[in-house]
Image 1 (cartoon, one colour):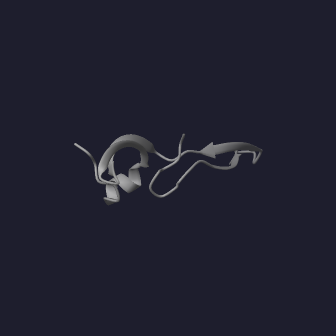
Image 2 (cartoon, rainbow, N blue to C red):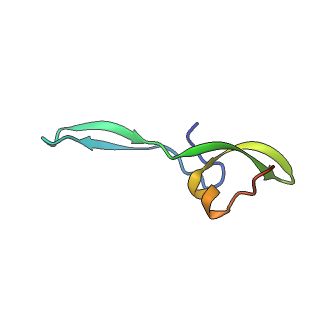
Length: 62
């Protein structure tokens, strides 16, 4: 469940290259936190990436 509910950022895949340039598959997951936020006027637990938290796109519920 590494997907941001606000911006939609999710896991991406690519190749890991070793020193000898041998390629293997790997994935990069966003830094997603489960926080209480105000959604449609009521507090809910949603998955939000730390970039959305830092930029103020999410109103935290106390």
